[in-house]
Length: 119
Image (cartoon, rainbow, N blue to C red):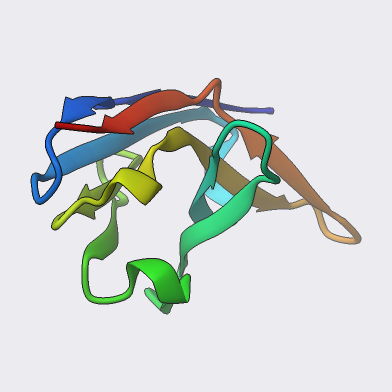
């Protein structure tokens, strides 16, 4: 099992910045990739950014150039630096971890943290 706890959400004005954190614990040694997803009211949950163990990153087109995903393996923490925030970035942001168990990959989720961008 892997436990994920997000923090860092809040209310920010358009153009502002926030940094989300996700602390991972449990069987983290076999995590192969971690990601941030978000879900706005009435919409599906979409991937925002993903990072593999090798450091390869990919981003949703809507956040490229504004958001940066990073991972501190020593602290077992995932980050999402969000700059130039827009009202359409408002959503609940979820941390995700994929853990390889050999034949399968198990996916774990945090409880989510609310990000609201409004003036």
